Amino acid sequence: MNIARALPATEVVAGRWLCMRCTLRKKADAMWDGLNSRQRSYLLACFREDQEAERRARAARSTYQDPGPASVWRKLPFSIKAELPFAEYTTIQRRLRDEGRLDAGAGATLHALARRGLLRITEDRIDLPEVGLVTRVLVELTRAGRACARAGLGIAPAPRRPKHLLSEWLWGNLARVAAAGPDGLPEDVMGGKAKYYLGTDYRPNGKPSRGYIDCFAVRTEKGRGTFVLEYRWRITEAGRRHINAYRVAYQTAYPNVQVNVPDLL
Image 1 (cartoon, rainbow, N blue to C red):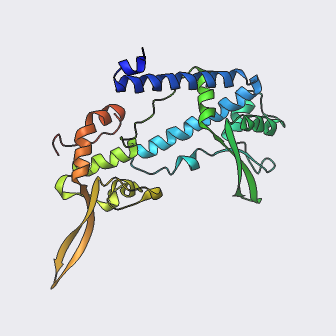
Image 2: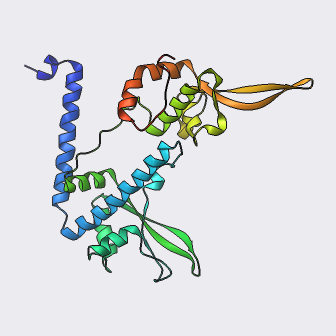
Image 3: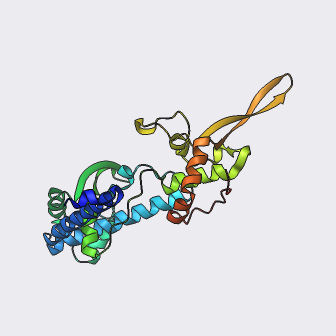
């Protein structure tokens, strides 16, 4: 008997998803087992700084600021090619120094991790006082690298956000527009680039925006003419349907978003 045919479709999908998760965890465990103690120290030092960068991005979103794309803030300074004391150690270097792992072989260890697909190495140029332009080495953990580090630390992977739900930052902005009611939320209060993802007729990153909010003009009369006083944002019908459908899911997923959204929109 074909078990998959006997189960409801949702259970089949859930079973396949769990199987895939188990396979990925086994691959991460195997990758960790294949690293020597020095490589593990370097991977974990990068992972801890990666998680700090992630925490800072979440903190920015919680105050409705845009931290920028993860492809930018996940690039972590590893070293600066300048002599001390003109260039200080980076946070990752200080972590490794405290463990007695920082030495001239650091570059070789990073490249060994890069060959395994656990991180990427790039360089940029920064301006140092009294020195000028110098080269800085950046490291960026891949998903496989983060999974490998979590496996080594015994940390369960964080659940992935369903595609139909907004990020915490976007949900906070949408909730504030909803809470503003018919009067709307002033445009200068809208956080960062949120309007391009939540608004109508935008195409951020080439993809259509959600259409959950729309902009309208607040006009005032002066003399014989009418002038635009300011622009505000208010919820669209699509935005109301989205909030009403997923309100509970958002409140569970993002308890730090403290906005009183009306029960009925």
